[in-house]
Length: 337
Image (cartoon, rainbow, N blue to C red; front, top):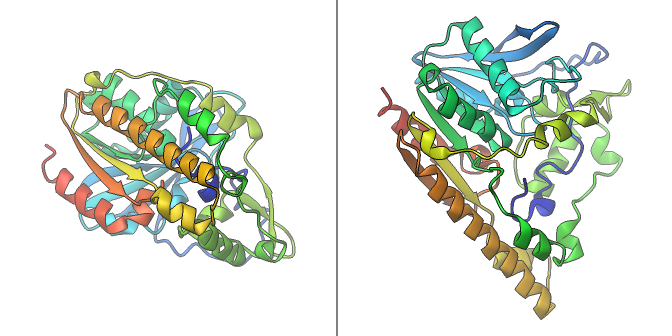
């Protein structure tokens, strides 16, 4: 799945992997106030589950492709005033087990259900970012009796999406916009330096704990190699599932993020060639058109769907538009039985 100007933001272009392993001798401590559980979901497969506490209905956070539950370390505590908040790191990532198999949409959804069972969660609201939308759709279509509602955080990607026109246009984008920036050696000297570089490059403040759960820390404290096996993300992406959204029988809240305008991108990347400007605008227009098709699909959900469009938002809408997302989730949850 791509989003407009993905190369500029490198949402998932750098290899991402979990760290925080036993080799890490750093005294650094995760500042997020969560309890860490490990839940067995299959023989020799355990998932890391973060528990931020809170009172009220259970709310479960699912990360996007390449990310762990720690990506919510700053966001999740802001929900604990109304919910008991959990986050699941899916198999293959972070501190969760990394088996050779089990990356189909159905199996990943079964993993989520087994966590719900282990924690005795009743009708949780399940919130998923990006690729986690596949698991949300599985839950809403096939396991609607186990959940209370679904929240899609820019997560309406689907195997029914047609990227033909988008991909053709993307190859004609200015090279500077198709090539993600790369960190220098000084940017990799520590995880805090790496995080600061990522903030400057993408404009999004991912918690340092997330990067520490993706990559090894070298003996000198610098950022090392990725830890997730390369096959994991490929196996998850191989499914290309198509969903019948009309069969989702629980209430849905869906956020759609539109990247910053093509005019702003043209200015940022100093695109002066007229033909290249036209391509930039065409790519944006094509992506907006695809988003509108996704909106039409989710509005068919038999449980009802409320769609919130966020213009100028990053793909990580819960970080770029945190106040909007928090407000809408609280309002939505108040209407869920």
